[in-house]
Length: 439
Image (cartoon, rainbow, N blue to C red):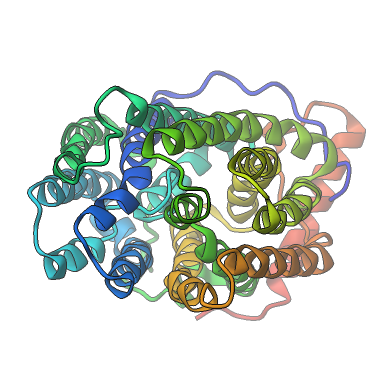
């Protein structure tokens, strides 16, 4: 793993990859605007802390449910159809929230998985994009770096929009209707999905069973994917304690921060994320996927825990930005890792399993955060830092020796490197075969 094979400069992105990255961009712009606004909307409606926690929990649970559905049915129904359906649902969800639907109806909308508590989501759309982009760049983090960079940059612009005159004022009236911004986002996404080519679909084997379970769809990579999913779930459990909604609430309660100031902060956070994920592939090429993931993620969790002790908003904001410079480098590398340990026909299922695992445990986060805040307002930050740090240590202990299949097309010519690729591929094949027959 360490010092992995140096990779050539990647060719220009294909038309499908550009469309998928554009889809991520328009969605992130909408979420960048609404995720930061969400806490203010819920507060303006006069919901109790328990009701707010229920909405946030439903939002996170919805992403898990929708990701699971994508993993089971997307390859059968069609990835492009599911992608277009998601964006259509996003437009409808934005319109319903803008109309000020009752609290119980808001819970129903939340469980669809079309809304997000964070600027960069990991729900059903990400599951589809991750699988469709794998044909472009399986084995490296290059395309995933560009993909996440565009998402973070677009999310930054969405958050920045909250600083426009009049949008950050404290009155409750304007907040809900601003969710109508998701309507054009959804329409644009549908148009992008309809332009994707047939090459984004998976070729179904003649023996494939319609509606087969994840166990059958994963095949020989099942054990590796399940173990990765378990580790990612631990990390996501810590992240669920400190969503963008929680951070917004924390800054408001402790430092009485205005909505406009939060807009500027999360704009800066998203800009830093864009730079961070753009740098990650270069580090991965030099040090390997696992080393890049753990080497950047572990110190970021120390910075996360330290925010709990910040004496003022400027100090807390600086710590959050410092943490963000490192925390997002594991995103493209994690996505590349999952796509590298599975075969092409397993990619949708592997993406769905790992993403669903992350979002299955995240709904517990807001509930736990609300409970431990009875002890101290910053307690969720400390717990999150400890949990996520434990994930880093566990991942390094196990996955740093995990053989990866590096496609020959990504390795420069030369006898030494060619041999490395063959060795890695043979090791991975042996590891898969040692797991026994598939079901």
